[in-house]
View: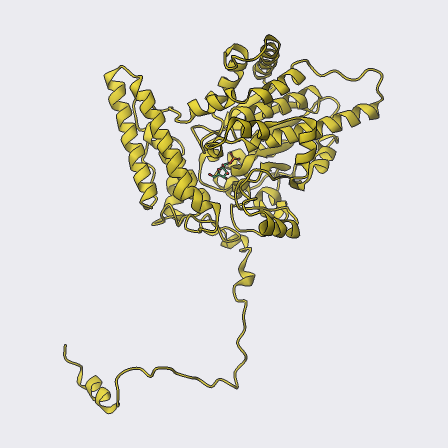
Length: 510
Ligand SMILES: O=P(O)(O)OC[C@@]1(O)O[C@H](CO)[C@@H](O)[C@@H]1O
């Protein structure tokens, strides 16, 4: 290519057309260089927050310093591989040709998903399978994640998306729409939890009795102590979630589920941010319930099986103690993060407690205690004291900062509650936008609009820590653990019990 004459002339005029090796500018009269730019940029102001830009930088799959990386690159493909094994097992037991062919198509879709995940594909829209949540998903993908891949989208969204795609693999079929690839695992794990199951059933099968002749203060103090222990049982019930139990031995599971008094006292030290006393003060006050009527408590559930069992034990006590008169359990509409509760899991637990043969080595007394408990809990369901609910927002990729915006009906519904307890790690990640907030961030700051909007209910997070984000914990404690105990953020050995007061009773406006 020949040069433009002017350019050719200017090149000739120079001894060399190459740029000088180094250019030094003497800027001695200008202000000195400064550092630390960007340090003030977090938390982002609310108007700059969106699902791709949380208040603090989000965790993403390519961040190999975080659990996001291990999850996206190793754990999710493993979970998906096992899911395919489960479907193959079902396929091998099937005899009807049409159903078999239909199921092989589900398997191909699962294989495509595995390829997409391992090949770090773009997050494509969810195929319209007739489900009500399609706009919620595809709007989010179009608006915030167009062109994003499994590894560079925020972890919580990419991970949730994987479970929605897993559901899509079946929802597009004719015969297998509600198939749950994790159902077998969930049942098996509960059946392997016999020690802890009977420890609780033999204590709680008999209805609560008040100590005779005790004064009102003594009764209240007894209640306070029981509340304390049961809250912990419900909390630690979360440490046995299936997605992390893949390599655990029977012994490990037993240790995690131990509910004995010594164990509880020891593990209370591991609750790094602990608002339990404040919660008791609220729950035992007339702000929560009146003499005539107990309060309404909502549980946003996490895992099926043993954790759901501990949620029921807790709910049962809250009803019997008169503190609550109505408890709402919020589950998932389809298989979610391996072991989350669906309606089928909810029914399965109650029915297998009453009719099941899950524990061949249990004594008659143990089995009878379990049955008695199961019958009482079924009665609560019949009487509407315990209500199971599902909402599509709980199986979306949105953080709970977006709850009022994306699911105003759900926000109004929850605003009618006296306390909403969110169980587990995933709910905690979604409450706090799953981002790199400093550990000392107060809980009510970390949950944003769910604490500040008019009508926001009081909220508690009961979470054993199983992923990177940590809030409501003294900075020095988190620094010390980061230094001395690598892996503490994902071990499930530590926990938080955090309360946000909310703005209960104020009129909700949008
Ligand atoms: O919500 P859960 O059952 O307490 O925990 C869910 C979990 O196992 O899954 C995620 C990683 O896949 C983590 O947030 C967390 O460790």
